[in-house]
Amino acid sequence: MHDQIRDYIRAGFAGLYIVTFEDVRAEAELKALADELEYTLFNWTLTRGILNTTSGTIESVLDPIDAVNAVADLPEKSLLVLSDFHQFLGDRAQPASPLVTRSLKEQIRTARTAGKVIVVTGCTLNLPPELEKEFTVIDYTLPDAGALGVIADNILASAEVTIDAEMKQHAIESAMGLTTQEAEDIMALSIVKTQTLGPELIAGEKAHAVKKDGLLEIIEPRETAGDIGGLDNLKGWLEKRRNAFTPAAVEFGLPMPKGTLILGIPGTGKSLTAKTAATILGRPILKLDAGRLFAGIVGESESNLRRVIQTAEAIAPCILWVDEIEKGFSGVRSSGTSDGGTSARVFGSFLNWMQEKTSPVFVVATANDVSQLPPEFLRAGRFDQLWFVDLPDAKEREAIWSIHLAKRQREPENYDITALAGATDKFTGAEIEQVVIEALFECFDCDTELNQAALMQAIDQTVPLAVTMSESVTRLRQWAKGRARPAGGNDRMRSRNGRRLAA
Image 1: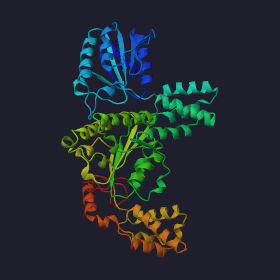
Image 2: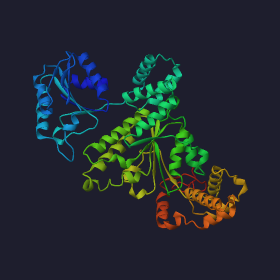
Image 3: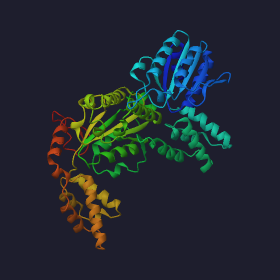
Image 4: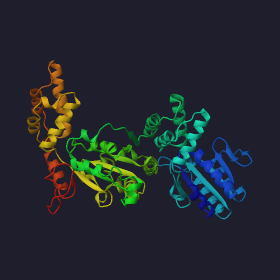
C-alpha cells in the first residue's frame, strides 16, 4: 500500500480518495511518504482546521469549501489531507453541495500542474458523479502480520511481559482482520486479564468486533463430520482439501481452492455441512449475511462488499460462508429498475472477486432455490464443485436417527433404528431431529422414558416438506440431475452420460 500511494504521488495524481476506518494510521503513512518524497503534509479536520504537520502551526479554516480552496495558497509539493470529507460529498437523501464539488474539481485540476495532492479520507466511498473521474480510489488494507507483530511487541514491552515466539505468532494470527486500534485494545485487554497474549481471548474479542457492523460473523463451529448423517461424497471431497492451503500444496502444483456451492432441499444439512467444513479444513469460518450488504445510501452497498472482502482476505486462510445466497442476490435481474443497478453492481463485483481472487478464502455458498440464482453465478470457474443435497436414503436416515438419539443421551441400540428409518421416508434430517424432540416432550410430560412408540407417534403426526412442497422438490431434483454432483449416496453417483463417478 505504501508503494502504491507513493507511485501515485510521484506520477502526479492530484486527487486520491483513501477508504479506511483507520484515518490515524493512514495519516501516519502519508506523513512518512511526505517526508520520503520531501513534501509538506497539511491535515484538515472540521474541528481543528488545517495543521501543518511539519511546523505544527494551525490555520483556523473550519468551512469545508474554504479548506478545499486553501490548497491554492499552499506551497508546491504539498499534500492536503481532508479527514472524514466523505460526509460533505452527499448521499441519496441529500446530494453534495455544488460549491463543494465544483471547488474540488477546480482545485484538483490546478493542483495537478502545481505539484500538489488533495487526499480525501473516509470510512466509506462516497463520490458524486461529478468527481468520479477526478479521484483515484484506494482501499486501505487492514494491518498485516508484520504490523500486528509490531503492535504485539509494543504492548508486551509496555506491560513488561515476555512470551515465547510460538504464542506470539498464535496471538498475531488470532488478531488478523482487526484494525490497528482494535488490535491494540484487544491485546491490551488480554494482558490485563491473563498477563499474556492469549490467542483464545483475542479470537473471542475479534469475533465481537467483526460482528459489530452486522455484515460478518465469526462462527465457532463445534460440529464435526461425525455429526452429519450421510453426505459421504461431499465430506470426502472436503477431506481431500484439508491441506490444500499449505505451501506444500502450492509446490505440488495444486491451484488454490475457490470454494463450493451446496444446493438442496431445506433441512437436509447444507448449513451444518458449511460449518463442518471449518473443522474439516481446520480454518476459521466467517458467515456473511448477503442481505445486509445492500444499504440505502448510494455507494454504501459497494463499500460494504469491499469491507467484507478486505476482512476475509486479512483473516485468510479462512472460509467465507454465504447462507441462502439466493435471498441476498434475488433482486439482481430486476436491479436496473428496482434499485438503480446497485444489486447488479454488487453481485458483479462479488462474482469478479470469486473468479480472480488469489487469497486463500474458501467460499461455501448454500442455496435452497436455484431458480433465483443468475446463470452466470453457476458457470464453470466460480466454484470448484456444485453439490446437490437430496433427501436422505434409508442408510443415511439410520445414521441421522443414531446421531440425534445419541445427542439426547439415548443409546441408539435401544431402538429399532431400521424401523424408524423406514417410517421416515421423504423426511429431511431436520425433520427427523424435530420428531425426536417432539417425542421427548411427550414422554417428559407423561413421565416416561423415550420409547419406540412415542417416536412412531411423532412420525405419524409430522407431514414432511417433501410432501407439502412436492412440486418444488421435484423441480429442484430435476434441475440438479446431470448439473450437480450428489452429496450423498452411492448408486445415485452418475455422470451425465450415465457412467459412475468416483466418490
